[in-house]
Length: 215
Length: 215
Image (tube, rainbow over all chains, first blue to last red; front, side, top):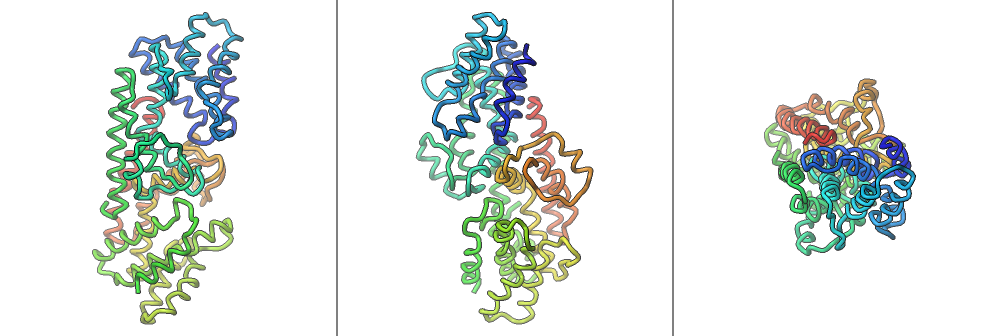
């Protein structure tokens, strides 16, 4: 059944950009299962929720954010799930995971599975992979730079911002990536986040030394 | 005079992509002066050559590589230099630096200044900055990914390749960045390259561990 759902989910990612492509789902799935084992979560729920969590992401990006991919993803996901023999309780949990994996409003992840998926998804934004994604994302947005030297200043404003032309990869780090380690909801997630965060800090330190020609 | 030439050079970079923008020139300039001091090079020649080395880069990219920015950059650079009171010997050397900074054909950097500029330019492609540029570049090329898992296989073919749609940032590393440390022409360049190379190797190791959910 998981294989079938995987096949269905994959279709939504044809033509996705390099930050939100199927490889993101694969990484989130691995992280979620790894953390889920430690947190004694329902791995069946977790694996399916991982596969389905971003199925509406491409459409959200293509429509320039006219809807929330988590909310719409839940609806679409429910339609897929209804085709399979899954208990109502698990189905409800999977839907809850999809809906709350973003957690930007008050719709908080409540089940352990939703908390694990939230952590796994956010963890993919930090560490070496997260840095790669941030630079790749900056490149995919017109005329974006590696840095502008205005990052610290903008980050101080502490606004919830959407990445736009003229921004930089380093701004993404200063405004978003830096804060992720404090958002973790599970113990195992916190541990991985700490390690990935520290790695990023070292990378950024070195990055600036190189920029100044000191390394 | 340097300030005036800098102002002239900067104009060529309006609207450049984040990999080949003015910040690249600034980094190359710093590296070139740092290495140049150690190598007892003519720092005046080196600084001007750094400022002018990529003035035709944007046009080359915009024209999808219909000419070589090093060869054309030499011609354009000579026209700029002719407006200033620079000795013929130095002017000749600056032009030689611009023409040979790319070194893909038999036109090898011969003066110590040309060797230093070559090293400085290549060094900006490796280390933390080089990794950032590789991911950003992949993002700027349509539908490029972080990785495709086919990188080692393609790299084995050992072809001189141009980055195109469907390629990945990791391919850039496997095909180009990995080899740069062996291209250095100066002692100081070699030392910096070794350090930057080792840093990249560690980054890539960690990157794959994270991809596999093992970090």
